[in-house]
Image 1: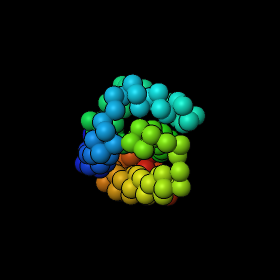
Image 2 (image 1 turned 120 degrees about the vertical axis):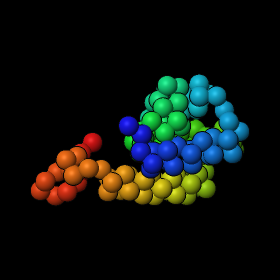
Image 3 (image 1 turned 90 degrees about the vertical axis):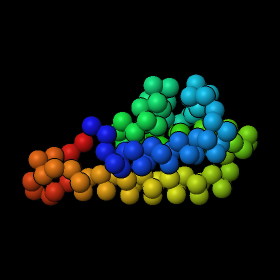
Image 4 (image 1 turned 90 degrees about the horizontal axis):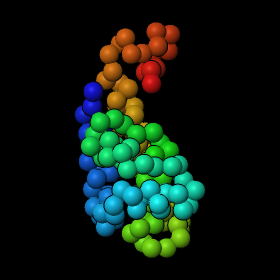
Length: 116
């Protein structure tokens, strides 16, 4: 079941996708593969951008790098590293918020961490 955090994070990723020229999902996958990032698939991109679930950090990093590459048409530079750090922080916040709203039964009884 999609969460509010997944929907909000997806909206942010969709906005980035648009700001970077809205390349096709296939093109994003090609770009991710070019720099050796985490492999992406069009179906996974669709799921994430539609807010069906929060992505893993590997997805976020590959997706953001691929979009930056498409937008700038250049080898990834220092400015991309700063952008990746911002997205990593945004992802962490979404994960923490999502974990904080999960039902008690989805948490470890000894430490309170969310499963999954």
